[in-house]
Amino acid sequence: MDLKTRVQNRLITEMDPSMDVSRTAEVRATIKEMYDAILQEESIILGRKERDALFEQIVAEILGLGPLEPLLADETITEIMVNGPKKIFVERRGKVQRVNLAFESDEHLMRIIERIVAPLGRRIDESSPTVDARLKDGSRVNAVIPPIALNGPTLTIRKFFKKPLTIEDLIRFGSITEEAVEFLRACVIAAVNIIVSGGTGTGKTTFLNVLSSFIPSDVRIITIENAAELQLRQEHVVTLESRPPNVEGKGEVSIRDLVINSLRMRPDRIVVGECRGGEALDMLQAMNTGHEGSMTTLHANNTRDALARLETMVLMAGMELPHRAIREQVASAIDMIVQLERMRDGSRRVTSITEVQGMEGDVITTADIFKFEQTGLEEGKIIGRLRPTGIRPKFMEKIEEAGIHLPPSIFGVAQRVRY
Image (cartoon, rainbow, N blue to C red):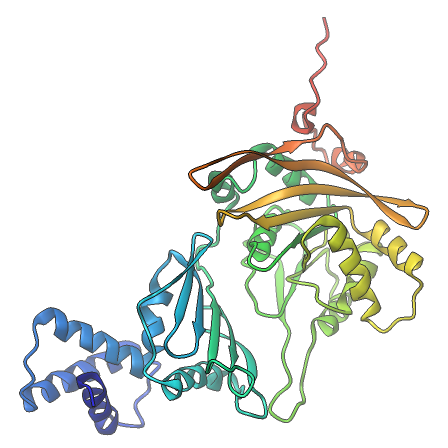
C-alpha cells in the first residue's frame, strides 16, 4: 500500500463521521492537524514540498474530486474528459491534450462519480448506467459506467466559468467582428427571433449568453435550460431548469413542459438554452404569437441543416403536420440564424449570419448577411474575417422602428455622398 493510501485510510478511519464536510475551512484544519500527527507518529519524514503536495492530494480525495481538483481549478481548461481511470484528457484553447494524472482504479473513479451524483438525488448503477449532473459551481457533468462504457467509468465535465465571456472577449479572440456585433446588438434590441446553430463544443451557450446581454433591462425574460448556464445580468429574469425523472422514474419536468408553462408567465422574451426535441414546436408557436425577440440554440453544422433539424424536431412533438405547414411555421417564426464553427486550429468563430426570408414554393429562402471568408493559414492558424455580403435584411424596418439607424457601411454598402 502506498504512503498516500495508508495515511488517507487512517485519516478517514479516525475522522468524526458526524463532521459537517460543507464547512470546508474547519474540516481542512482538522485534517491538517490529524495529518501532521499521523506523519509524526509513523516517523514519516518528508520535505516541505512533498509534505504539502501529499496533504493537498488527500484533502482532494476526502473533500473534493480527487485528481480532478487541480484541473477544475485551472482556468485555461474548458473541458475535462476521463476515459477510464488511467486516461484523462483536457481541452485548452480548443485543443485536446492528455494530462499526466490518473485515478488508482475503476473503484476510485466510481467513488468520485458517486460523490458528484449522490447530493443531487441521482443514481448510477448497472440498471441506470448513464447520468447527467452538475457540480456546485455549475459545471455540467455526464457519466457513463460499465457495462455501457467498455473502457471503465467515463466522465465528461464541461466547465462553468464564474466570469462569463463578454462580447469584447469574442471580438479580441477574432470570433466575430465589431460590425457584426453592432448588427446583432440592433437585432436583439429590435426583438428579432434568433437561432444560434453549431456543432458540439462550438460555444453556442456562450454566444447565446452574450446575445442575451443585449436584451433591454426593462423586459421580462424567462430562461429555460437543461442545466442552468446562462448568466443574464438584467433585473427581471426568471430562470427555469428541467428535471430528470427520479429513481422511481417519476417527477420529470421536460424542456417542453417548461416552454409551455413559460407562456403563462407573461414573458416578453423566452430564451431556451437548447432545442433538442418537441419543444421546438412550442418555441416556434411562441415566436409566432407575440413573443418576439426570443432565442435558442440547436445542434447543426450549417444553416440549411439547422432548418432541416428544426423541421425534424417539430415532428418529434407528435403532431401530424404536413412538411409545408412546418416550413411555413419556421419561416414566419425565425428571422435569423447565427452559425458557429470550431475551426481546424481550435478557434471558435461565427461563420455566417443568415436571414430567413420566407418561402418560395416548398422551400425556405435565406440570405447571408455576413459570411466568414478564409484568406490564409499562418503557422497552423486560420486567417480570415467575417465579411458583410452587401445584402440588407428585410427586417431592417423593424430595427429602424426601434430607433436604431445602422450605417450602410455595416452591410458593406458604400455611403452615398451628397454634394
